[in-house]
Length: 387
Ligand code: SF4
Image (cartoon, rainbow, N blue to C red; front, side, top):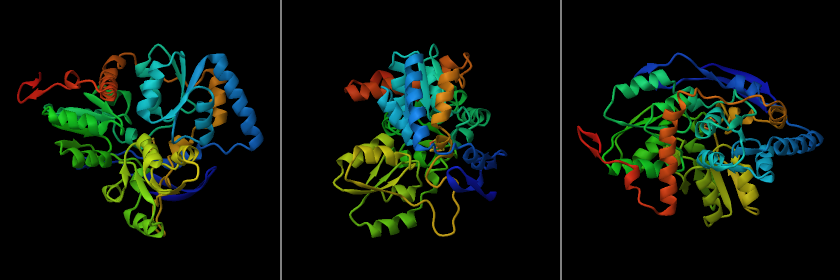
């Protein structure tokens, strides 16, 4: 691992070449360098610049008849703008659903690349713009389609379940796409119907789901550079300093961190837990971009970031995703002005990539409405496959 101190617009960070996950005992050659992502994080606008840019973006959204779809981890300005202009701030499942169902013919996705691709796959007739096309994800980078397909080909009897944080090509190789807000329910249902799974790419989320469901899962060895950094020992020490605090953990975190949680779940589940749990102080193990929505929606409550490292340790993200941080007001205004940064997905991939996403959306809609799930998840009969 290469470590080099780098100063960025976001302050001093460590430039770290991320070690690619190990697959079947062989290290993949390439690295994803968070240093170059941090170097592309725009400077904070001044208060005056912020006002001008926000007004311009609001006017351009109207002019283009576009809607802004933001993730909880992007900078607060972009979250606020989405809410102020009739868009949404949400997790990746809701972003996908909202973009698909909204009447606007232009979707502006503030998040990372796979979110823009998912919007395009679900709405190929719409224009999908992103402030930054280079904004990616360590999970996506760590799961190249050729290697992942070869892994799947070695286990043709297994149902392939992939996390939404993957490329369109990997989704096209999958039977199911899941997000952290529906993965448990879908895997539990697949297990009940006799499916044995391949799971990719997040090893921590996969291990959590395996522990919770007992499903037979072969894991891809990927991780999120943000959640992978949370540290159990330091979290225990922080808990000791705040004995009344509840701990909220995203399941992309390591198992020993998850074990300390009062609530484990997706960004939406974390928001819900902050509203409903009986506490006024919370320690939060997820990207610190979440703090904006947590504080906005829970005035009077205290939110503390979970520790990412001990003394003298280095971190790749310090609890904030460099690719999410690349989304800025100036870039958003620019793409709305120019129509640049259009997200494209090869048309030949779209029908196949859409199938597993549609399955997920149909499953979650049925579950929410209390409808039967039977037709959505086929029973497997050994040696015959799905029936
Ligand atoms: S926070 Fe982690 S999972 Fe989310 S986009 Fe960044 S690297 Fe990917």
